[in-house]
Amino acid sequence: MRRKVTTGLLGALAMAVPAVAGAAIDPETKVALDTVWVLIAAFLVFWMNAGFALVESGLCRSKNAVNILAKNFIVFAASSLAFWAIGFGLMFGNGNDVIGLSGWFIGGADNSPAMGDAYQGVFSSLNWTGVPLSAKFFFQLVFAGTAATIVSGAVAERIKFGSFVAFSFILVGLIYSLGGHWAWGGGWLSKMGFLDFAGSTVVHSIGGWAALAGVLVLGPRIGKYMADGTVKPIPGHNMTSATLGCLILWLGWFGFNPGSTMAADPAAIASIALNTNMAAAAGCLSATFAAWLLLGKPDLSMVLNGTLAGLVAITAPCSVVTVGSSIVIGLIAGVLVVYAVLFFDKVRIDDPVGAISVHLVNGVFGTLCVGLFATDGGLLMGGGFGKTTTQLIGIGAIGATTFVLSLAAWTLIKLTIGIRVSAEEELNGLDTGEHGMEAYPGFVPSQEMRTEVI
Figure 1 (cartoon, rainbow, N blue to C red):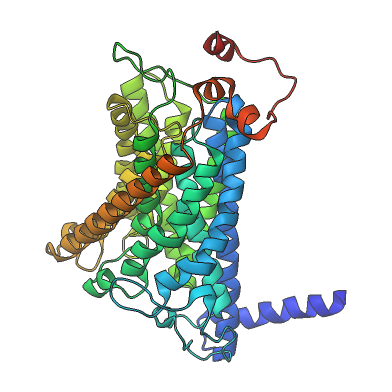
Figure 2 (cartoon, rainbow, N blue to C red):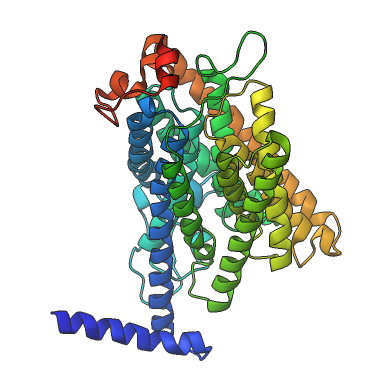
């Protein structure tokens, strides 16, 4: 058995050599290589769930760590079922320019077409790649789960666990998939020429708009904003966790962006990976210095969010811009996220981890960057306003629809099962109130926690 596995791996590597060298390969080999690449990329994106869990729990207080970890864990399970039952068909099923009307439960399609054959069935918007339908579904699923995970951090430390799970089903099953159909499922935006290669809008802005609606319905944490207008800092309890989580997210993005080729194309994968990394690096540095200038110290949470901002911003244009443009995009994104965090605090929108600043603000910016920096027709590259106008239409349409539907969903949840824990439970911590356990049992509470309770 071990010998057969080894022989199979060597055979796969041997088949890969002609592809890497640029030689022609037969269709079956190409489909096999494309499928392996798509699944590896999907596994990397799935691993981003660990990154989000560590970032969000680290940037919040220890008394809420179990709750945040539980939300980040269960959200992918909820997303999987919602996307399988409804979301995938709504997003990619054949229908009209507004909505998919077929393919519920991944039905009505051949899941195992002959190797090399173009996929034919009720998901014609995915015909452009020849990998099996199961691989296409799983790759799109991890993106849907990412959008839902974004919401978790923004509503942290005061939301009911069950209410968050309920909203996750609604977001992935309906709201995310509707906007995704317009942009990626053959809908009206894609026909206009709207480009969002890996999801600055479809994933990150949709998650950000949903998070903003949730925060507005939920309200700020107790003690965050004083009566005299001052903002009380509520520091996270574990910056080691947050830093490790950010590194995991940085790694996962090399599946997120290059994987969106859905083909083992060496030149495209390498170019997109490089653009992704350089934007992240530039965002990290510009956020560091912006925070240093504005706050007097190089705040680590800003450093981490600056890196994520660069990654979010490059997600839409990563396939159509140069390395130099990627660096410029990252530099701007890093500064934007620092100012956005300070702005949202000023207007009393309480986002404990900066998710709205990272994903919404820079999702919008990154999508706009396609129109500004695209080598073929970008406004700043010598083109006209055509691409920029199309990108703005897509940003506005998906943003407005997502926000309104999310606001309605959060309000419905509030009026039915309730959305916020009691004041007593919030002060004592959601870990014991919602889950009956502590993340760090036996540890002495910090001075900040003792003061808060008193």
